[in-house]
Length: 467
Image 1 (cartoon, one colour):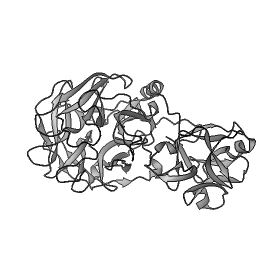
Image 2: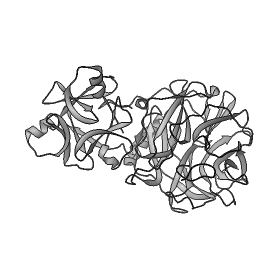
Image 3: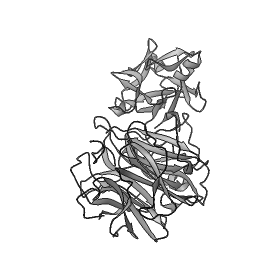
């Protein structure tokens, strides 16, 4: 669950221009992650999330979807608008979770809460069935308990020994602090009585599972006393059998862990979400879950969907990836990330081109339509999404957002050629059309065109073109 007061805690691809992403190799068939055994055909991932932005411009409490071929760089679907929204309870969701069931179809679970009214208490969670994440049917709210407390951040996994799905979630029971509860179900229509699944004696929320990895089951959660992500493990899936063991990881206050297995290597990724209303995802990597140690990834190596909060990531097949993009559509816009300041994105502010740290509002200041160059269609021009009559152009070598006046001078000033990144050939640099010895670069976070000679210059002039 994201951004709410809890007892004992807080109040509350990288793409070269014009290139398609490469589909990674299949995940080994004997690995079980989350709720199911991944199939050899799995070669992509889907993320579900809700959205929040600093002043609410990008806030929406419906289910959003993004897809990825490497589980680190994400393409929002449906223009980052929701694909389904609850119609009962609070009328909104937080903390969605996508599970592929044993029959190959999906079920979506989510917290019954809209916004940040933490006084709203719901013993229910939202539930949808979906054959393919292109249609959502059977919407219902499922009651998990009769306690006077919430049912936050529901997730689920298949418990083969019980022949049932386990639904885990955060709630305050008689202990006075949040614990991880569990109910069992065969059909997500009725559930067993609630039990305490994990209670280490202090406030814990947001459980995420990796089941049957080397004969061990892993539960990652937020330790509210440390404001960090911590792992527990057990040789069984029995309630009460998990013991915390890992080194805590955090970037500021961090919650909402997501465990993801790479489909091209032995790496595991652990995603976490800062709990401010305008949260930022951070990611860590490990090659051995049993070690309980994680190394922070450079923000160059991953990009969250814009405004995304408290996500869920599940493997999908190449066909499912293709079908989702065909159904919901790829974004009509792009975002450009700085190579040497990867927390910052190219945006306009007061019509000045610059790089600023994500998140910010209006978030649309950082969204661009990359259109054929106004002076040469083999080049590119950057059309503003929220000011579509305006383009990035250089003037006295500084980039600014100006209205296209139809002149040849404007067209030339607003046209650039994309090249292999000067600091990293898998990224992109942009050479000026009419000043071909100069490239777009940032200097004191302001964009301009300059000759490039040093390593620092090359880093300043390198960007990723993504979403």
